[in-house]
Image: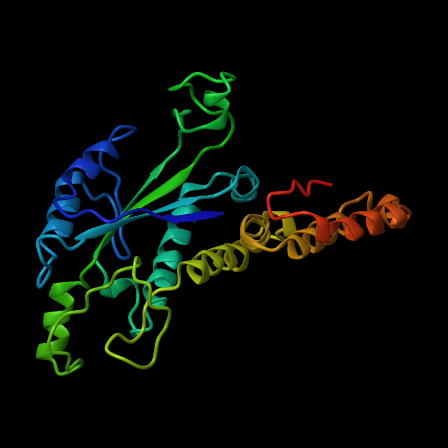
Length: 273
């Protein structure tokens, strides 16, 4: 499961919405309703920007990309993926540490079922694929547009009812560098790493998915950012989970030899085993 948050948009979201209408028109949904059209999405996001400056981000895009293994586990069921999206947006709201839920945000999601190769894909760069060519297998994924400002209508209703006392509505940026701070001018924050892990764990709980170590965010993140020792230890742990684990247990000399070589190499070394 890849959960990605893109750079924010500083103007109207109309361009992004129009782009996301390329596969099918309409069929947007949010936490409490479906069958939403593009005009309603643009109006909902663009009108919800009180107290934001001209150069402030007005909205963000969250992209949820299940692996083909995860999609097969769901039977590529779009209703299940919609339910997961709603759960994920509760995780998103919770990461700010403000005691809010998905219903306190303005967001709209759209499910797409196709992907094509782009110029950034390694296969295209190596001339193994052509840009624009459709990718094989299940490619279902979700695009979510979420306003930076909390739901102004809900904020006003709760303030008038005395449920909340905040003078101004919350401005919620997943791009902040603050990570759940409890002191200083800015409290709360957003931990993007924690969000990605929470999204993965939510999928596993919600659908009873038995996730192999090699499919975890922790595994991918460690291989990319961990030390040589951490990467090697994780690869060895992954090997122990493979069906042919016994053959590796019987090759202890090879494992020990690899460990002895570690201090002589830097982080760019290929640790593929």
